[in-house]
Structures are given as C-alpha cells and as structure tokens.
Image (cartoon, rainbow over all chains, first blue to last red; front, side):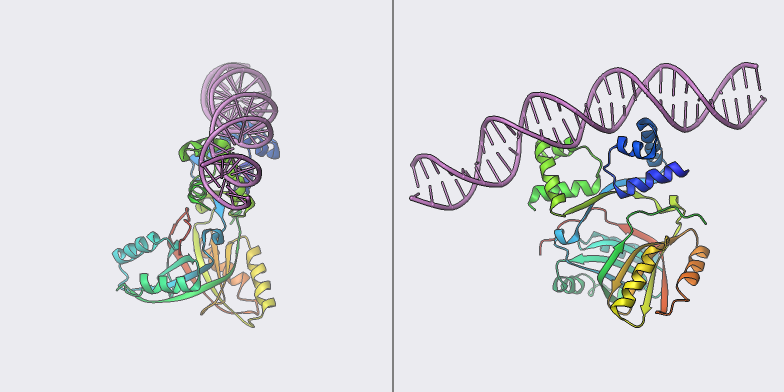
Amino acid sequence: MDELDSAIVRHLQRDARQTNRDLARTLGIAPSTCLERIRALRARGVITGYHAAVDPAALNRHVQALIHFQIRPLSRAVIEAFKTYAAGLPEVSTVYVVTGGDDMIVHVSAPSVDHLHGFLMDKFTARREVVGFRTSVIYQHTDKQVLEPLTP
Amino acid sequence: MDELDSAIVRHLQRDARQTNRDLARTLGIAPSTCLERIRALRARGVITGYHAAVDPAALNRHVQALIHFQIRPLSRAVIEAFKTYAAGLPEVSTVYVVTGGDDMIVHVSAPSVDHLHGFLMDKFTARREVVGFRTSVIYQHTDKQVLEPLTP
DNA sequence: GCCATCAACCGAACGGTATTCGGCACGGGC
DNA sequence: GCCCGTGCCGAATACCGTTCGGTTGATGGC
C-alpha cells in the first residue's frame, strides 16, 4: 500500500470506468504495471468491487430517512433476525448495528412521505422486538466518494 | 425507464466493469443497443457515475461511527457552515442534514476508538454551534449494493 | 385498409484496448 | 561477486468500444 497504490485507489474511486491505459498514463506507469497493481489490490481485498451510482429519485425514491430502533431483548439472535428482516425490505438500503441510545439505525428511501409512513407502520410497528423507533427525514446529504487512507 | 433499463441499472450497480458485450449478451440485445441505452441513462442522470468500492480497514479505518449533532442556532447559514466544515474533515465520509431529535448525523471512520475520541474532542467540542452530540459506534453494517426501482 | 413517419434495434467494420508473456533492471542475502 | 526474487516495461494478440447505415415494428392520418 504505497503511494502508487493509493493513487490508483483514489482514481478508481472517482471513476471506475476509465481505461487502464488512461489511468496508467495519468500515473506515469506502463499499462501492464497498472493492471498488475489493480489485480493485487483486488486480490488483497482493498478494492472490493465496482458499482454504478444511481440517482435515487430516478428509482422513484424521493424521500430518504434514517430510522433509529430500540430492540428488546438485546440478544444476538434477535439482533441478527431483525437485521436480516430489515435488510430484505426493498425500501432499506443499509442497516447499521450500533451502540449508544439506539440499537439499530436503518437507512431507507421511499417514493413519498406517505409511502414512508405506511411502510414504517406496516413493517415495523407490529414486530415484538421493536420497542420503539424514531424517524429522521434526510433533507440534504453530502457524500464523499473518495476515501483517502488515514495516517495515524 | 422500462424493464430493459432497470436490468441494465441492476447489472451495472452490481458490477460496473463488466464489458458492454457481456452485459448485452446477458440481456439478449446487441452491444450497440446496450451502449445506446447506457448513454441515455447517463444523459438522463439516472446513472451518475462509476466508483470502486474500497474496504475501509485497508485504508486504516477500523472503527466507524454515526455522530448525532444538535446545532444551535438552527439557521440556514449555521447549518450550511457546519455541513461544509464536517464534510471537509478526512474522517468524515457522509453528512446528513436531518429532522427529528438531531439536526445533523455524520458518518465517520477512524483508525481506532482512541483516534475517534480524540477526533471528536479536537474537532467538535470547541465549536460554538454544537450544543451536544452522541456517538453510535457501528458494530456491523449490511449494505445493499443494488437498489431496485420502487413501484408505488 | 394503406401508407408515411419515427423511434428503436441490429450487425458489420475500424480503431483502440485489455491482457499476456518474455525480458530487463534493481536490491538483498550469502 | 553472484544468485535470486521482485517489480516494471514493451510488444503482440485477441478482444472490445463505438460508429453508422440499414431494417424492423409500431403509430397515426386519411
């Protein structure tokens, strides 16, 4: 994980579809060298995949929210089961198992606030392990698409 | 945004580096048709980019957390300034401006809990607009990499 | 029913690309 | 000094992206 690897990771985070030749030219190395580096990064698990980013609104997801859940009892089995259940719902994009005042935080997106409300009522209020949840509707969000290595 | 577009988006979300020919073969269409569809999806803003996914641990980010902030006064200028400030910090990956009990939720990652603690103390406690914050350390997180269109 | 029109799709062709592989330079161990 | 391993390079080959002319199928006017 030297400076060259960092540069490759940085560039591929920004644009994963640029050609290997272009990337090599930008970095001032041979295409074959660049390719070998990328393969090593994938083999080491540094780069886990390449994904197209999609506008949620184009997928009829105009409203996003973070739902904070309190779960009881706090056993491994209950947490695991609720996590799997939530992750399987189409409105859910991410599930965080956390410590603190809440036990689980779920990122959801829905066509409208009406749909969101109905979704929460239908899918969560009836479940026994859910003793309560709060909804934080997302007004704005800034996403850093390039994550740099941290030097402690 | 017909079924073919949805299929293209689905496949590119899963693997953005598969060749256009492979994708066309999978979908049973000609490469030229597939290319034209993808170009239209980008032009319409449905697909916003292609990004490599990176393992945070490989970037020396072994600890992740969601920080819940309460900000005062709740004016546009203060919110905007804090959002910009937070988004500029290297440990921060996402900033959510939300409604509910909290005003802002920030996704951060750090090399260790020690680093995280120092980071929070150094970068946030001294700021006047921060009247309080809670930390939710992330134990697990499941990420749905493929987002399907919702049909209301 | 018939025809004009338009959009979408296809297939071939060309220029560029990914990927492989043999060779070279450099540095560490002995 | 010599050997060996590692990383890099450059050329070659098979493959791919992209363009473009032609075809098909649906739609609307009469």
